[in-house]
Amino acid sequence: MSELSNERRIPFTQEDEQRIASAATWGMIVSITSIASGGLSLLVQAPIILDNPGLRGLIAAPVLVAVYTLVVNVWLLQASLSFRKVALTDEADQVYLLEGFRKLRAYFMIQVILILAMFGLFGIMMLALMGGFMR
Amino acid sequence: MEEHNPFAPPSATADRPEGTALVFSPEGARIVSSLATWMRTLSIIYYIGLALMLVATCGAVATASSAGMGGAGFIAAIAMLVVVVLIGMAATWLRSAGTDFERGVFSDDEFPIGQGFRSLRAYLIMFGIIGILGLLSNIKTALEVM
Image (cartoon, rainbow over the protein chains, first blue to last red):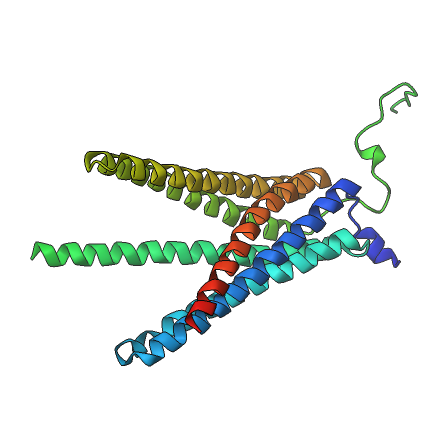
């Protein structure tokens, strides 16, 4: 092992390494099942929307949801793979840990931003509806 | 000059093997601090959702009781309370994980990071089980449609 990688090794206990490996495994399960669910939803919804001429304009919605699901869960998958390397290898633990944290941050950040944006959109729609009723 | 005391208890830093000290770069500390902030923000959103669901549960029970549907309202209330408890647990684990990661990085100690992974694992196990159930439900729907 090189001197650099030895310097970056983190002395986790055996129990902690097992926890990290288990968290990584469950992270992979969450990401893979979510991507598969997103793909299946698109496969089910797209033909229904495309068969109905009145709904064709809405095809972008399930496609956007599927793309969002894919991107977000690829980040979770990458974070999980990095955490797995922290637990299963003794090289460059800090580098892998920070790489995992960076991807995990993107995963949680996009969720918060999307939820806040949806709340904002909902608020604007409610205000517009209330404004319509007031007139 | 300080005298060496052979009976002094060992310090916490003396046990750490040389060359394995946990010192993160400023950029690493910034990433973890930012991660902790986003995790805590998401947990606050979960708590707000939890409060809204509790209000909705009370409203549903009151409506069902006044409409003479006590049994159905009770079952619906139990189901919503289970969801509320699950959201509360997820929010607590998420908040705890973020705080522990941040504490570990800023105190250069791997122990809180291990604790953080324990909370993160619990959070991911819950969402993993929900994900598996959701996938099975989606497969069933897809098979029915096709």
